[in-house]
Length: 109
Image 1 (cartoon, rainbow, N blue to C red):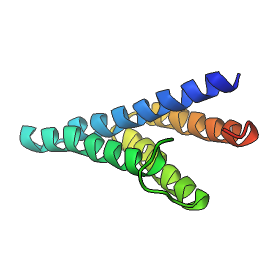
Image 2: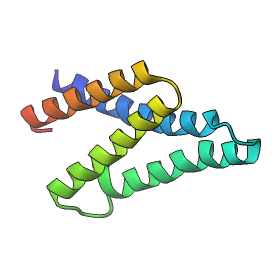
Image 3: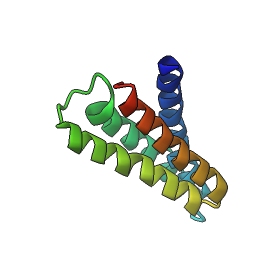
Image 4: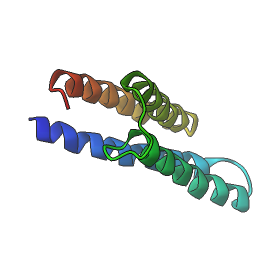
């Protein structure tokens, strides 16, 4: 079961990036702004994740700070998904993130 939880974690990270992109492309702005937000925001989010929260992160952070970053990152993805009109999907995403994180703590992952 712990392997399945790590797989879920990876899928949630990808879903978070997709949520950032979806929100960017769903904005009611003109095409250049949609492209900037739809491509730029997930790119920035991916770089930050790689630097701070990934298992091979290059910036060592204390556990509490890393947990706070993850909460903000996943929380922002859920909020933006809801803001783009996908409230049910945002709630399901947020619940899965919380369940995944609790299981990671229980299984010391």
